[in-house]
Image 1 (tube, rainbow, N blue to C red):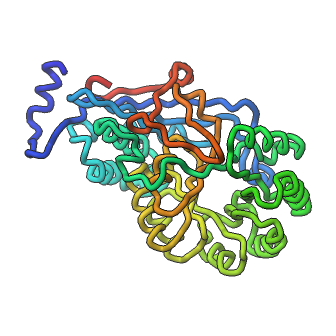
Image 2 (image 1 turned 30 degrees about the vertical axis):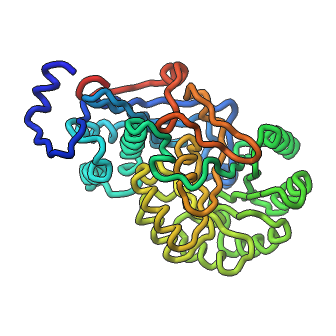
Image 3 (image 1 turned 180 degrees about the vertical axis):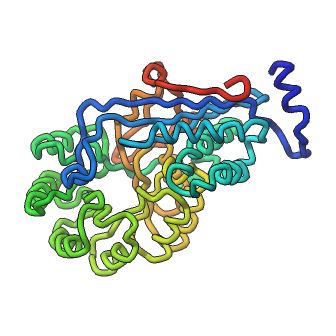
Length: 392
């Protein structure tokens, strides 16, 4: 650490318990291209365009004691540049803070942008920093994050989503299923929500037959049914012994989801689009699903995710985090009830490390922290970056 950095931090008071200070923060905007455009029900209804790339906001935090942490947030379709801009606005708030004071830092960053709200883009822009701080804390302890949090298991049931999009013809979906099972996947999810439910029924029937009667099988309507369609088609789907029906209704229709949860035998799963603890709390306290599906980058990081986990467990919910398995593996391993983890291989080019999938489960790596580092390819896909303080 250079002299100017020492002088910059000299005025900051230190309590006896303070152990370190954040000296540098780097924020990067990186675009991950997808091999082929992806479409789900939101595209078929005309509400969104096919997905061709994902914007990632990476945060790299360094401290005066030489510790480093990395975290990320993401946006599909729109929003990446806005998240990057807000992350740059609040990044200077981290300089000089003790990186161990994660909850207090989260509140500080949240209030820095509170005039724009405490959900949505403002909380999603906090996530890369919060996740990086948890990564750093676990690395300092020499532990995988799951072990730092207190793991209930060393592996998590894992299902695949990326092979079952509506943009893929049925024969391709069946081929993807075979490839996933050979790789060691423990469950299969496909997209539904076609304008004609008869097409959905044909695909679900074929996939269930291909999987056999007992293999875990989920479907995802991506919020595109109205209440009547969800109720009627939900009854039709009872015959397939599904693990869950995901996002049958608009993400904010708590009342509708609660009615479906009460009336159908098939479990309901939702929550991936919610962007705060408060929004998840409404869903949980209304008993509006059986599976809760929070997304740490979307809710503002690991700090609010842990709050959601506590409330969900208290209320008896099952957990199935959305996307970002590189982060959610550790969080799911620390959930008291047996969870599910969503498998996407899309992010693999971004990192130097790979996660182990075996016998239907994803295994927690023994590497400290989250256990990943940015690849040269991720650096090459970076379009903008900004640094604050020193050493980032």
